[in-house]
Length: 426
Image 1 (cartoon, rainbow, N blue to C red):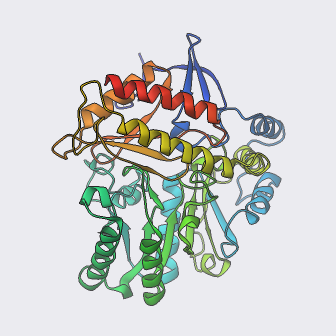
Image 2: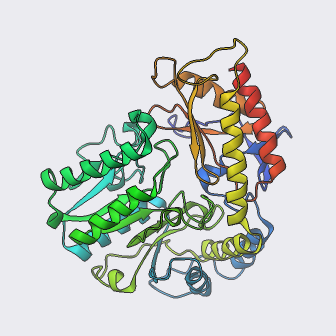
């Protein structure tokens, strides 16, 4: 009998019958709060009426119009819509299907535009699962192990992960920038370095936000050496962090941003944005693809962007994100039933951090080591109580909350109530 690959393990036991907004209903009729959002994809929630209507209408007109063969209206409409959303200097777009493809496109453009072979990525980053993007991914070896040799030309610099180092954010930032300078002096000459590629918030790496001093330090070095700054906004884009794009929290201007996940509320579409001047330096034939800029996905993306604007979902992300972060920190500080206290926190959580609707709780044992077992147990127990969550981090010891941008204050409170009960039991 044909079956799915045995490697495709579900994070929760739920089989969906239908879903709406922030709620999933399984085949047995049980309701679940979805604080996974399809790993940050369904930004406007499940089956948003505006997105559903746009997709249904487009399916009846044109499903696939290959965009280097013919042009179609939904793609032109999406380009126009993004003109009012993207930073003004990023006025040229290329569309693909997945986050990995977007990162590959940014890599290809960076190398072709600069004529330089190397890139620097930052420790803990996740950029995809293809050979090139897995090489650039350092959030866990599970994404790159077993199919070496990987791509050459990638060097890894520290990210200011203050909690892991046991330092203040200022100390971690100073260390990261100092080590970056050392890498440029010892491993890859600035004259051979095409780009810095970095997430505004480490996603799979543990939901760790960067900071203004760090990103401005990257910008200064990029400007000094003619290096491009690529912001991977695949998970942080389109309102997820409480601003339209994650880098906007840090007063930094990227040369390229990558787009995917939340742009179309679940339809597969991705892309990169750069200036016309920079994009024109790509080599002829280097951009394309069979399914990129799919007509139905483009229509859904236009509807998604309209819903985000009309319903004030970026502001809601900021407000509900602050509520969620405060509540998660309060839950972590509650004494457990044994009255336990330790360096890892009273509920075994050593750090709670996030930005907007990206909130992570890192489970740590009393001796400071990652407590993967407890994190996994908490995530699984939450699912039995109707709250769907995911884990991340190098040791998978961070439980992450990623509700849709449409989540309400009442739903956040309900989720936090469940989370508090989980922590009391796990």
